[in-house]
Length: 350
Ligand code: PMP
Image (cartoon, rainbow, N blue to C red; front, side):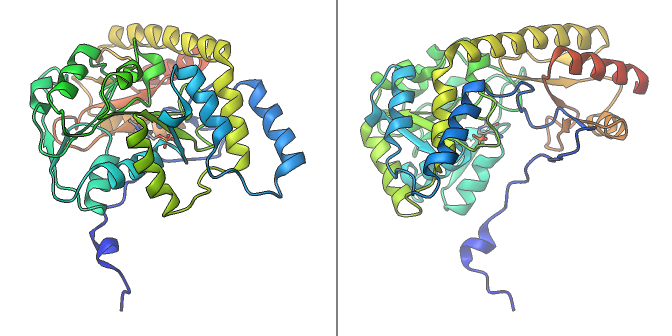
């Protein structure tokens, strides 16, 4: 006898990338940052551990929301925080999309979207990308129940211009449009500025990538206070204290160290450019990346083959099985030294 509810039967769980604590494995598979977080994070967490861990955290997370609002040029009432952007996205699917109205997202995109849609019974249409893996904005006009798009898209790494996004928002006046900006700090510009203009726009961001805090699990959303209220209602019906004390002070310290963010993202972008050139020299087709990873394909090798050969040499990358990208691989950008080592091993196995 399986005591499973309908929801448990319906769910098609997301499978996260392989995680290892083995320092002899080079992890280029889950788009983590190779640099440590700002040194201020450690200081803030140490102090909080010593002084306040016996107390519940603030359910309204005002201190972190104020800090995010200041950096993002908005008000605290327009900021929501959650336990990683995956959780923020879950609350957004529950609180802003509806089981009676069909949403749209690209057919090649972050694979958590269909998982949430199935779990929360939100009908969806998966829209094929164009031949060059870009989004045709017109495909997302006049939807019945809303849109969710990552920008830059994952795993393609391609950035969609704010003009195209704005057109999508304008052509969905009565529907929520969610832009998932997990990788935006490696890209030209954020859609947060548009949240002041369009009350149906929610922009979701994370501390996991550019701010090197994947292990702390903090994500946030920026949008009109009406949207934030809906997310807060869902959160408080689920677990008011989703963000713990260490996460609050750690994320706040990272948010306030703008110079460190600039320095580390700049380094990763330089390394990305160099790695792209090197891979093209070796015959790879590399999509134009605005992220901390490269989405690549080689005419003479399939993705699984290279994945297996690299894994045998203790380097982990991602390869895909989905139709349309079955020969593609996704490679996270590490430090210069890591990428040099990666290329040495690649030359050995090809
Ligand atoms: N959105 C996209 C597009 C992602 O690639 C990821 C990372 N897997 C996330 C959201 C979730 O990131 P996190 O939960 O670590 O904030």
